[in-house]
Image (cartoon, rainbow, N blue to C red; front, side):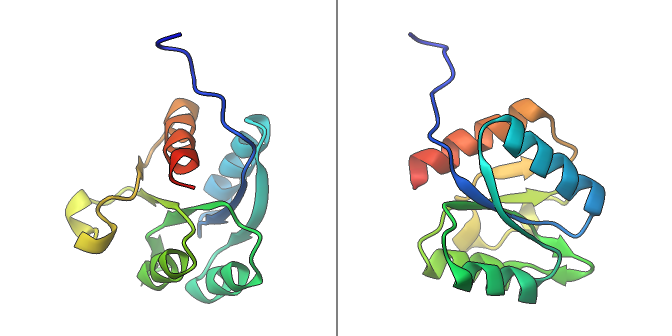
Length: 125
């Protein structure tokens, strides 16, 4: 039926976020929505290590990690053919052209925003 939420298969999702409270909120929300957190990374290095370890269906990536841009993480995800959403409170113009098609989770966000992004990621995987 039109308007119904698409039923999303459970996904293993990597959270790349340097703010512990936001990471915990995301973990709780993903769990509540029936998804599994594949891991949480606070830095580019930690995120790439988790991507290399595999078993990730999708990722939510904060583009600013303690002042370090997360574009190497986006590149690693793209290379591994793992769909990802960009999480940011910054202007859209900060997003490089090659990642402009990634779903955007604008901070501050609500559960409905996370659900919408998960639907997009599910359709991409």
